[in-house]
Length: 496
Image 1 (cartoon, one colour):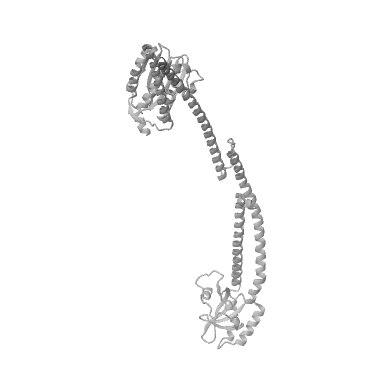
Image 2 (tube, rainbow, N blue to C red):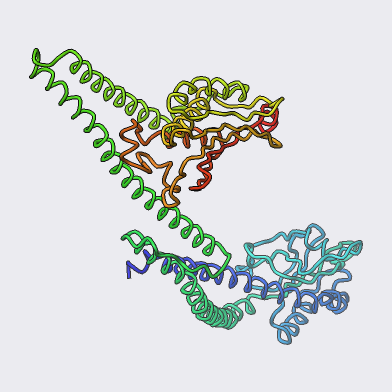
């Protein structure tokens, strides 16, 4: 039973039943009060002129003085015909002048005249019932009928009739009380039964969806990340269901990303270990050879060995530098410091820098730059790195007598930067992976030529940091083209 009240269904049902009980009690109190007010209003309306009509019978016995014997006889006859009423004679100020009851039962000897004046008012319609004082029960107000009357010569007063006598009260408290209680008890029981059953069914159906949701969440918690809840409605429960489904999809995506990142981390460690091991092993071998042979090795051979060691050290330094740079781009520690600059001048400077290397490999390095090219916005050092990496890759991997071209093209709000070559192109299966870290299309040739496999990964990160994307298209008959966009200076200001 305790477990039931700890459930949402049990709590809602308990609160609902408690509210039903409270509402029923309030309804009973209002019903009883309304019933009594209705009876009082009806009684006073029917007997509104009772005092006025009785005053005609009392007048002959009140001309000079009060004839108590005659009046008492009249009252006795009236009480036999209508035991509900009690008759009193009052002075103008409400003082009890005459009564015809047991003196010990009279508790109040002065009646408030405010209700009497309201009852007799002719200037405005006073709503009934009007409750007045009862001499026998000072703590209760009762309906009455009243009329002005002369109590002897020039002595005005009131004939005051209580419409609910003590005998009537006793009868009502017994018969009426039991009738009201029994009726309200039946109404309460029927209401509680039907409303309770209907409410329990409705709450059960409502919490059924929540229970199903709880089961799904538990299964999801236990590792079933494919689990989802079917959304049937647009109410709050339906919105909660949709929120859970979206959260589950986000968590599932994050889990996949974590697994992918973990796999990339493992591959990164393996690749870094491999790329570090090879040059370190080479360096160690050549140094050990120099130390072992000492005077037996000639100067030319020693120089060759030292040059190989130096080349490997430079490659290691390049690898560590690029790893550090890529790490800063990944963790967003390195942000572009944007400024307007001439992309045409930057391209010309980069071409001049690579011209000796291109001539050494018999490769033509060309530019196609339109006149009046606008300034662009970006980090000039980072963009220099991007274009340099792409040109270096092109020169490194195409055959002698090949051609590398840098093209700049102006569009509506940006400048397109393109680096293309007429080499053998990139195999279709390798194109989606060329921006991955340590990925080499031709592994052996890349290693021999000193490539770390991080250049294009750095290029992609830099371009993305500038809010752009880098595209690649490759064909065996036309070569390879890399392209990206840089925003024009004025357009960038408007966007900002």
